[in-house]
Image (cartoon, rainbow, N blue to C red; front, top):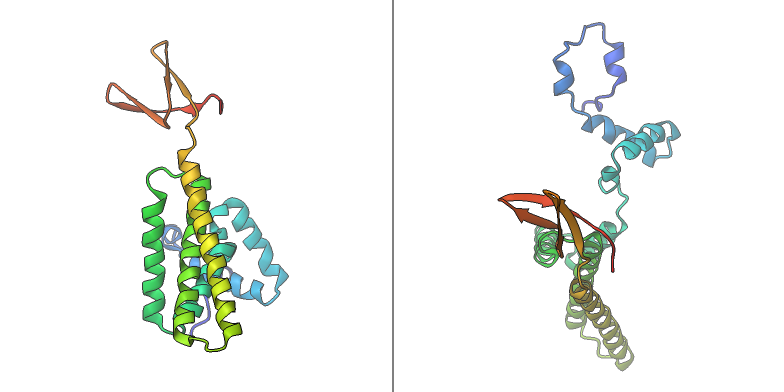
Length: 205
């Protein structure tokens, strides 16, 4: 298997690199090589990755910084086992639930709570599946499963109620000046003369 492409190979090569090659340069193998080295404790590989995260904080998820994604992945693995098709289908189902729940123009708080609802949905149904498959005959184990199910259901409903509460909160009054006229609105945008104008809240009230 060929070694991962690295920047130093450009320096070592005696062949001039055409200017147009810069647009075709693929940084993914370089980053993957840095990630592999950093995971083994190579401190020299950490500095370019820190710089990458400083310049592109959105890369944190791809580099393993999203603990919620890790928890979901572990729970999916525990639910479906080593079945790639079921794992893929489960992840897709979670994505569909997330898309349905976030709705249009969600706030960051709504996104966080929706992620919680989706995680609790999976956790609750995993426990139910586990309970049905194992069907513990021991009364002590039976009570333990029932307590775990009750706790998971309580957390699931609590996450749903929090999402409902967020969406029932009155939106802050927004203010925009157009043609020297002040317009108060209660949304994120206002349409006037077929043009959409973004506005910011003047206060939470």
